[in-house]
Length: 75
Image (cartoon, rainbow, N blue to C red; front, side):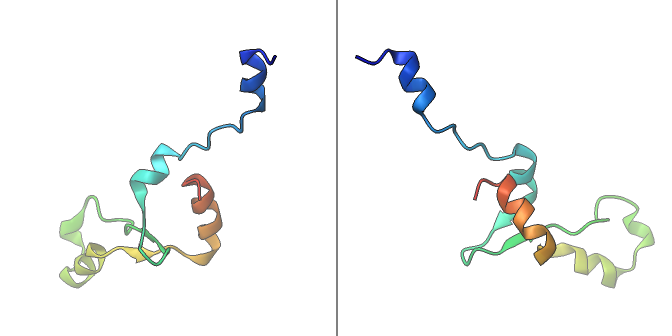
């Protein structure tokens, strides 16, 4: 018979999602990854209304960063 600790060694380790990444990125229904816009948090009175409006919507993650963020999200 197998001892319980031998079964534990055979298990595949659990894949953990990076906590920081899950707070910062959103995956759409079609699988794209969205990020929030940078420079949105302070000194907004200096920025024009047009520029601030652009900060409202999320932007698609650049292709060069997609692979790394998918790894952090456990995909």
